[in-house]
Figure 1 (tube, rainbow, N blue to C red):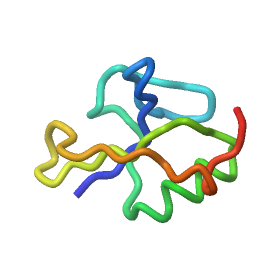
Figure 2 (figure 1 turned 120 degrees about the vertical axis):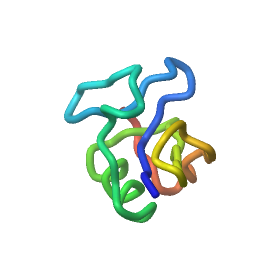
Figure 3 (figure 1 turned 90 degrees about the vertical axis):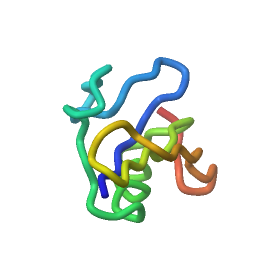
Length: 73
C-alpha cells in the first residue's frame, strides 16, 4: 500500500518541500496515513487529500484531509 498527499485542485502530488509532480509514481510516499496527516500539519499544508494505492499502481482511494489536521499554506 502506498499513501501520498494530493492537491485535488491542481491534480498534483507532493514530491518534497514546495515541490509537486503530476506523476503519482514519483510522489512522496508515506507508510501510514497518520504519518501523511502529521507531515501535512507540520509543514502547513491544507486542502489536500490522501491518495491511497493498494496495488502499487494508480491511486484507488482519495480522501480529503480533516480540516482539524491541516493548517493554512
